[in-house]
Each structure stands twice: as C-alpha cells, then as structure tokens.
Image (cartoon, rainbow over the protein chains, first blue to last red):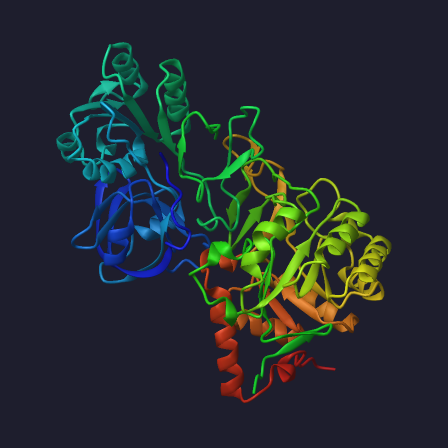
Amino acid sequence: MTDNCDSHAKHLLNCRVESLAQVAFNTYRLTFASNWLAEQAQPGQFVNIAVPRCGDILWRRPFSFHQIDRHSGACTVLIQVIGRGSEALTRVQPGEHLSCLAPLGNHFVIPAEIDELLIVAGGLGIAPFFFLLQEVAAQPYKKVLFYGAASADCFCRVDELSSLTSQLFLTTDDGSRGEQGLVIKPLQRFLAEPGGKRRLVLTCGPTRMMQAVQNLCKKYHLPGYVSVENLMACGFGACMGCAVQMIDKGLSAKPFLLACKDGPVFPIDEIVIDE
Amino acid sequence: MNKVAIRIGDVAFANPIMVASGTFGYAQEFDGLLDFSQIGAIVTKTVTLEPRTGNPPPRIWETAAGMLNSIGLPNVGVEEFIAKKMPFLRNLATRIVVNVAGKTGDDYVRIVERLQQVDGIDAYELNFSCPNVKQGGMSFSADAQIAERVTADVRKKSQRPLIVKLTPNVTSIADIGKAVEQGGADAVSAINTLVGMAVDVKSRRPRLSTITGGLSGPAIKPIALAKVYELCRKLTIPVVAIGGIMNLQDALEFFVVGATAVQIGTANFINPACAAEIAQGLHGYCRAQNLNLQELIGSLRVEK
C-alpha cells in the first residue's frame, strides 16, 4: 500500500518563494513554485529545504507537502517554528529562492475499495492530510478527520478541511475549540460504534498520540499507516540517521528501516513508535 | 593538460576530490544528483565481513556548525556488497575506494582477500577509527603497534593501494600515522570524527542512544587542519584530508597545509552535488591561477 518511490525521482531544485503567511499560532504556510515538482509530488512525500543565511545551521529541514496545485505549480508546506532553522524559513521573502531537494520518501496509497478513511492528526501532523484529502476528494468512501491541537489558535485551515471531509472531530487540550482532551477520545468512541466494514486509519502527530492510534488499530484489527517525523541529516538514505525500529515479528532480519527512504509512511503494525 | 591529477600508490586519480565513507552510501543514493565522473573517487560506506544492523535510534543530532552521529556501521556485509553494490559502482566513471572495517585484525585481512577477487575496485581505505562501534574500529588506530601490524598483514594480501583512516581521538595522530606508514600504507586519511556528546536537559537524556557519537562538519575543520598539517610534516606518504570541508575555499586550505587529496563528508548530506562542484571549482582555480595542484600542495608559508 505504501510505495517506494523511484530513487531517481528526486531533484535538487532552486525554487522561487511565492508567498509566506501565518496560518496558526507559530505556524506558517510557505508556498514556492515548481511545475515539475507539482506534477511529481504525492501525498506523504516531503521536501528537504536548505535553511537560508544561517551558516552554522547545517541540515536541510524536511517538510511534508501540505498542498500542491498541479496546474499552477504552487507547492506549499506548513512550517512550525521550533528552532532557529524553522524560524529562518519563516523570514524568507517572496521572490527569493530556496534550495529544495524533492520529492523524497514514499507516499500514502489508498485502496479504492475501502468504506471509510479515518485520519487522526495532532498539531502539525495535519500537514500531509490536506494534500491527501484534496487528492482523494472524488473518491466515494467516507472521510473522517480527527484533528487535535493545543488550543483553538493552533488549528490550520479548519473550514477547508471541513469541506474536504464527511465528518470532522476537533479537540483541544484547553477546550478552547471542539471537545476538550485528547484527539484519541472521539476516535475511541467512533471505533466503538458499528461502522464501515473496510476502514483504513492514517495518523501523523505527536508520538504518544500515534502510539494510542497504533493500540486502537491493534484492538480493532484495523489496517493503518503512520507518517513519522525523524531527525534526518540528508533525507535520501545516505546518512542512515533516521532509523526506525521495526516491531520484532521473529522473521525480520532487518531491525531498522529509514524514515526518509523506506518511509516516512509505514504500516502501523510494523514499526516501534518511540520518542 | 590535467593540472589536478594525483596518485596514491600506483593508482592515478583524475582529481583529488573524493567523497568520504559513510556520507555517500554506495553511490546509488546520489544517482541523478551529480555527475559521478566529475569526482576523483567514491569511498564507499564501510563494508564488514558479516552484515551489521547498526545502532538503535536516535543516531544523529545537529550541533552548532556540525552534527553528531552514531550510526554504528550498518551494512550488508562483504558478500552482498560484492553481489548487490559493486555492479552499480564498477560502472561509474570514477575511482572506487572500498572502506573496510573489522572486529579483529584478521577480519581486515579476510575482507581484503575476498575483495582482491573482485574487479572494479581501485583502492582500500582501512577504517581503523570508527568511534561508534563497541568492538574494534577505534582500537586499531589508538595503538601504534596494532595499527602497524594490521596494516602490514593487510598489505601482504592487497595488490591495491591502502589508505588508512585515522582517528583524531588519540594523543599523537602522527605516531599512529608513522606506524601505518611503516606497516606499508600508501596513504593515510584524516580525520575521522571527534568523540562528542549532546544532552537534553528536559529529559536528562543523552541525545544519542550510544551516549557519545562522532562530531563532523565545519565545527571540526580547524582541528582537522591542525591534524593534517601535523601528519603532512611527519609522514612521507600522501595525506587525504577530511574534516568539515563545505566548499572550494575549505578544500584549498587543506592543500596548502599539505594534503594530496580531500574527502567531502557531511556536506554531501546538505548539498548532494557538493563534491562535484568543488572539483569543478578546483579545475577553474588552477586554470585561473595558472598552477598545478602539485604546486599548491604544502605551499604553506611559515616564518622561520
């Protein structure tokens, strides 16, 4: 269901910044132009962007594709300011160019014969699902989004997400919007009710949330995929730094996979979700 | 005329810009990102006798102008390397240097013996200096006698040039360099990473699963320059410089202190085409200055 992308597909691109806008607390939407990339990119894949004007910051910063306009060539990522690298990327100006290595990683492949697509996103974990929901908009199956954030001002593009989904559950830690508490709560209730026979679960977000989703998938025998975010020095399998531990099923001779190359999308029952 | 050609042992390299072991995979990862024929040599990810899975995550951490790694030499082992990786490597229009590591001195001998039967390999780099494996690696490069003996043992079995990669985590890198020269090495490469550490105050945990790891990147360049300078003064065999080279200027500095060749490491992660760009830049520099690389090597001017 996940697909290893052709290793020849990635390119080093010099992309013009089209726009930068704050979309939520500490979170920005960066759009750059690449017709080629807009044709190639698949939901779940990522771009590794060099941090401009910061000589002492070495690594590129990886971002999931958040929105792709295949016609205009506009490629958008969501940037949350975590440290100096991400902060520098939120100070770029339209017209300047960014060095982008993309597309990287594998992607979500959703079988057409499912009844319900259940997406569980926490915080910036929403990033790849906007693109995914746009891509599957014409599919007949039900799309249910469980989206949790710290507080109301941390949500990104809720109205648009609402129009892309059949059902939307919002939760916040402080109760300032939607249900108060963890996003797992409405998911638990939803799964406890009888529903579609062929469900597929996708998740991306904080470690503990993804662990909880993993446990629920196990409990309800649901197939699922998790998109992980690991530190990576290169993003294309050279540094081998972004190792992900596989769940020991006794037959695996390969205890580690690479988030950048074998992932970032993994079957939820195959990897150890850890800090 | 090629102004930048160099020689190690009896092998000629079209230019002195190589990519460092562990930063370039087995080259396939970089397919399409640069023109392999523009670089002087590819030094492969370390090959061991048996497959290795590597260290558990977290394996890397970014530091000021550098990075820490503790990858732990994951690799497919020598037999699968020959079967699966060599077919791609031997078709590339560049020199192939296979980096070799073992737990025991005998491991090095056995791997090289096996690789002697394989074509498409131009030289070996003996990894005596990985700081991230529990057994072996480091110890071979921390003890002059052992380093000399293992080099001599491998020398007997190898018909190809031997480059010995040295650690800076010793009292005197030149003593170890001298020893491997005695043992029959055709060149040394230096420096491997420096032992370093990072800590998360919030969780009170080390940032790496192995607590310490190897520091690389521009942060270590001044140290690398000093170590390479020391080696160049004490050794007669060529020194291949490694340590924080990000651009042509950095590479030129190492030639001035006496390096015969340089390896690009961490920079490959950030700009996959870096080594090819530096090689092109070096051609341009030598043309513009109307000099041969040989005139640049060791041209450091020091007041008497």
